[in-house]
Length: 362
Image (cartoon, rainbow, N blue to C red; front, side, top):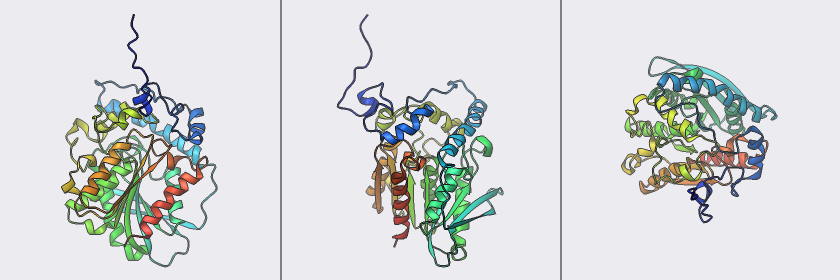
């Protein structure tokens, strides 16, 4: 019987060149990253999830709720061995959201700070479906930024599933907008000079969507800069389009493509907003982006989501927006933010670049 397997094509990267490639065998992978992920079973191909096309929304939410503690335990294991960040202080604030709900804000700042400094509205990851701003890795990131002379506000937005669900689009975006308005109104009280919106993965989605919504609502003057990291913004994971080859090239690297597709359904049940830029910013047009404040888009070389971030960056450039793009080579999705113990230089570089961007805004 003839062999029908796809032969390796060594002139192409990742799984485009070899369908059996994994993070562990991809020559582009940072070996320090592989050494962390391999013992956890995360350097091979991501396993398919136990859902089908016939699975209900309740099934998807149940799977997300079941998996959320596992992700949190994984991240805790990577961060709880680190010494505390010195020279910062934190507090919490409860505010009312535009939907009448309560929102918790986590405020981190330099200890004893008296002068105005940049403010960061930080939006955590988790595909808008799981995880929490209270998670250890996000608390650490806000402390790291505060230690670089910034006031950082983390927003505990409503998720589409998990412990903080089930609240589909636009609940999370509304909560981020409420936090933006609160932070902007209290810039003097907080000691904030410029205000930057920033987040990774699902938080990268909400970072860009918050800016797009502010633009639509005539409130773009609240935002001085946008720093989106490994943004999860296309919503096309069930049927990856050819213009986003990294979804194939890096398919199954750390992220399971089918799980991302199911998270799309959890965030927007029925798919009424699949091409709405406020839900999936990749669908924004160049005209939608004209007049935006300066942006940075950061992507990871070995991330399935890499090319949607790069494509958004190119649209910003065509729209005349002052924009810089950085690619963190050798790393998986959010790999520069997840392994400070094994790759402290990479983690510090991402914190430094965000701080530099915020401190140098005109």
